[in-house]
Image 1: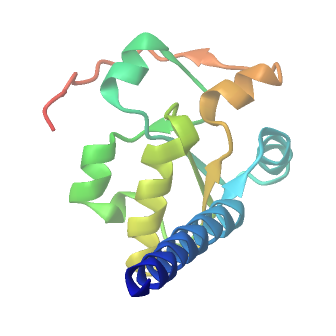
Image 2: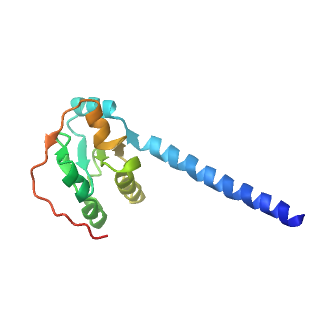
Image 3: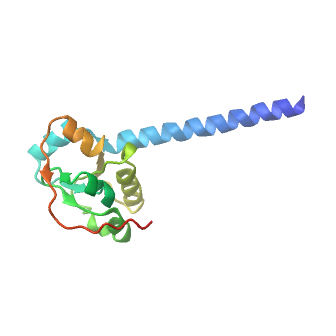
Amino acid sequence: MLWVVVAVVLIAVVFGAVSAKRAKDAREYRENTIDADALRALLEQQASVKLFDVRQPLDLLAYSEMIPGALRLPPKQVEADPALIPRDTDVVLYCTCDGQKTSLEIVRKAKDLGYSRLKVLHGGLAAWKAKGYPVEVYREAFRLDTAV
């Protein structure tokens, strides 16, 4: 009988911890994202917003287009040198990962280093394109570094 009580308590603790983590992740996601419409409006109003395409090389190869005005910034370069992202202006990052994994990972690490003006484009490049907003062909050479 005691083992049943212990098992129930253990399951409740694990369930509570998982629920708390999901709630924290959802809150963090909402606080750190911007949708395509808001980004479009921001870009039209403010020339000081910096937009960075942080897609993985294979994603860039598959979809060789970018949001006009975006700068390509390989994720590995940002990890090696976070100072590539300016601290003194609003910055929006985008990628094509499910759940914006690459962009959110960069934002988390940058915030740990004291960055505060970063957002992630909710839905990434696909959300931008779904709204019918313009894209341009990416023509610069890039290194297809697939090593992990």
